[in-house]
Length: 114
Image (cartoon, rainbow, N blue to C red; front, top):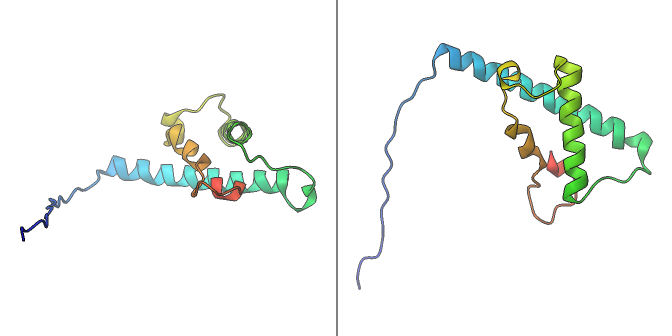
């Protein structure tokens, strides 16, 4: 019987962040937390207990519409910007888009999209 076991080796590198990168990372985390709190408040205000009759979006286009509305509201309300600026927010435009992907393909809950 031939030996069909394969072994993979990885190299371990010890990488340290510079002081500038640490500051950028802390600011990005603060922005991300503020965005998350803004999303929670918006969803509760829009689809919360007082709005039981309002249908929640389940397909991709309405969810994308809600995401774009939340992002534009966030940058306008919190930072007074018209467009997403990475230099001010320390968070790329793509990272909030990752909220829109459900954790499971059969999930039909808007909460799982966040």
